[in-house]
Amino acid sequence: MRERLRCQAALRVEADATLSSLDVPILYLQAAHDRVVAAAAARRIAAVARRACVKQVAGPHFLLQVVPAACAREARRFIHDHSPPEADH
Image (cartoon, rainbow, N blue to C red; front, side, top):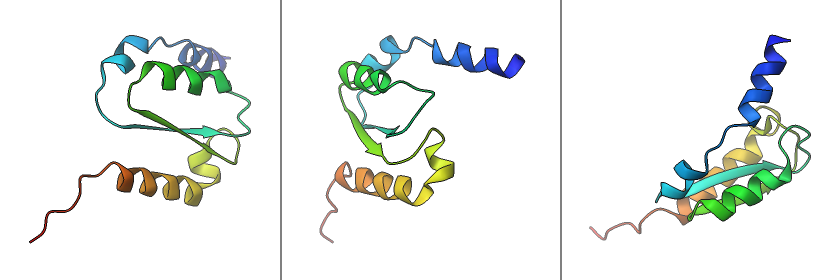
């Protein structure tokens, strides 16, 4: 019961003000088959955070635990795409 209340409270967090103030690239890995977090959450983050990038990954909630290789691949791609070019030495 206590765990369920904690989960419900986490899903009600209002983060729009914080997200809209961030000026850094943000990667949101959206589980394609998530039964906990609604797809609308990804759309909301993309609308509020200026530099958000939403990538859908095939899998359920707890993507990092269930499909870590796919998540790592998306993270590497995101870091590569958002890193400054290397300086010539």
